[in-house]
Image (tube, helix red, strand yellow):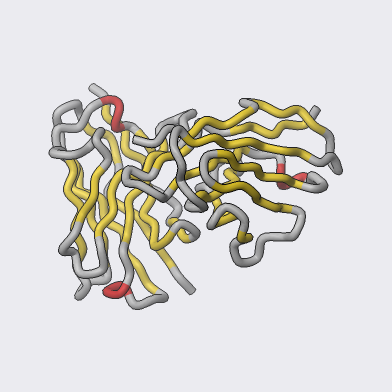
Length: 107
Length: 113
């Protein structure tokens, strides 16, 4: 099973800040990497697929990069709705596995 | 508009069984693989099971293999998850998913005595 590790566990930031979230895989997943945002009480919502392609309707402030085993999600200017949990997921090999999440909270 | 509506969750004792359903609309059900994903309280999601478009291939997480069975009925546009030998660690919100970007609202399963 591929283990996904996200860092940091928590980010304390202010609205308008730029944030960088990291995700590392225990082995190469090529570009088969997704990013989700989860707001309280809601299901996770897809932000990025294929490591760097924004999902339909996702604003340009979200950008993903990386391939192989190292990935990054950048939010260029945090909006109020972006204070949430973020998960990466590999879909290279079954079982598809998630990282443990990064919480982006208001400083 | 794609709609995925889960039902069948509830409180069950350890060792018991439940069958979850996911009624779908807004797309041609028989042409898509479908999944079940769960999320325990305060934990990250876990992709539990996948079934291909025809129902001929299924995949399970190690944590549920041998206890859970995924199936589908194209005539009823419904996805199912039969859960047997339930354990406390199966307590979670269970979501059905059409694709990585389309999930239902979920149904809560609580396994407790």
